[in-house]
Length: 207
Image (cartoon, rainbow, N blue to C red; front, side, top):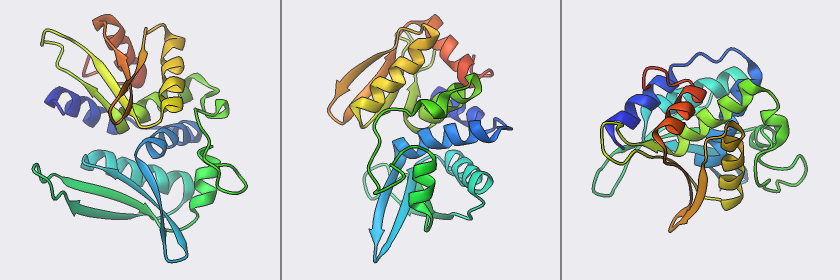
């Protein structure tokens, strides 16, 4: 990740979220994009993994504030070349209830819900929070001083990428969803639109 993208994300992790609805929206985007459900023994465990320590801390805090749950924080070394740490926020119980309340799975029977549930993004502040969570989870932006300026948000699921795209385009930002080898990518190319997007999610220093 470019240092500009890293600085932008660091700034976003320091935003103080005051309303519970915004906390839920941001958390929903983060968990949907970088969360995995595991079965260990007879328990369902939710792991949310990131290479960014500040994002891991933010997820940990949001879970505690929203659900009163003390998550576990694990650090793993990546075995591949770069050997970055991977930070895992683990929720060891109440997974079905949390995922259902964030509209990621159905209330009954753990069925995965595609797209973005409208009830999560009813208010303006929720839409901004959801996009902030999505950018923290899968976003990258190159340094505006470089020649080709673009912003991407990678999402494994096409339905989610397209839902994200239509949410971004409510603000007239000309985002497109393109397929890549490992899923889909939301793409914004024009400098002015990228500035508008960063302003929307609260990255004012990055601007």
